[in-house]
Length: 160
Image 1 (spheres, helix red, strand yellow):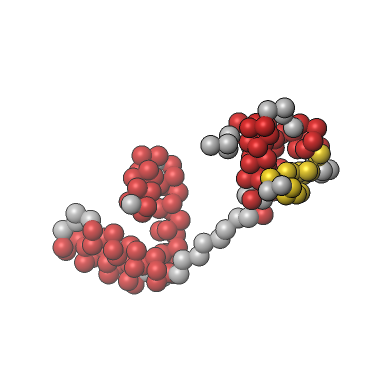
Image 2 (cartoon, rainbow, N blue to C red):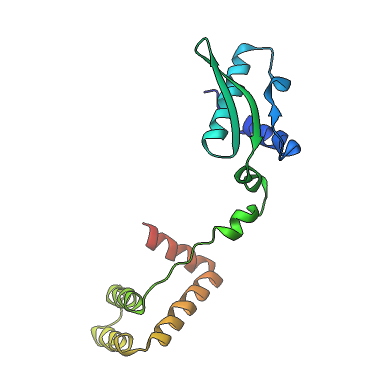
């Protein structure tokens, strides 16, 4: 396959040196025809993922990339911290108290507690205020993150 992650990284870094300007691809075309096709394939691949803007022409049924420019997605991809996209693309997840109650009751049912204990805990969950249910959810997440092995098990349970 012509696609090469190392070559793609090199291209992104090269375009970053010229950002925000266009770069004329003719300046880096290799002499070998196979390497040239691989270059174009990697540029088009990066373009299709929105990391670069590539202008291409087709002549004699062969695609040729003439210019390329790094996009903001490409810049953010190169940044170790994810760039502004990591800040601007934050997703907020909201769970209603009833949904949290249902999840808690399912976990109580799945636990190895005695039937009496399950009944008691489920009644507490049913009658708890929205604030209490929210606090339980927050503390559960905090505890899970602070207890690495438990967090891994929780993720395994949820995702599997």
